[in-house]
Image (cartoon, rainbow, N blue to C red):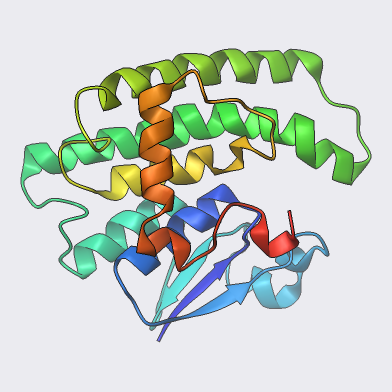
Length: 211
């Protein structure tokens, strides 16, 4: 039985949960409570010495890092979400990386300074926040231009690129990020969030915490 260790307040975790849902994989979901520090417990450190989510255990095989997990699961289950054709796969891979290294990191800066700091009792870093917002604006403008010409991120078919991107953008409302100016991106996001793979995980980011 596939085991998924994750937390719904973590975008990388949700990326994996969405992929598992889209692939319709039977699994056990283990909610690692980051707020209480469960990720540092001896039991979880035995699963991932880096004390981070997400992690999967597929039989005797343990894998960390969300992007690696996405590629592994889609490849193992022979899914078109990660195409077999070399160039098509590389293109999906390019957008997975863009979502993680650009959109996700920019959103992470904003989310940390506008949301997480409050939980930690810390003052936000205004320079980091401004930098994150500037990067996010550039990234979203780029995605918006792409989505003006096609229905999905990487091509004309739903793929891991869409899963990775929707997860990266998930904290927008909690982080008070207004995406309305990016009309094509906003329409794509609404459509993706209405899909079964997303709704089977949750209705929106933060819903498990009553937000």
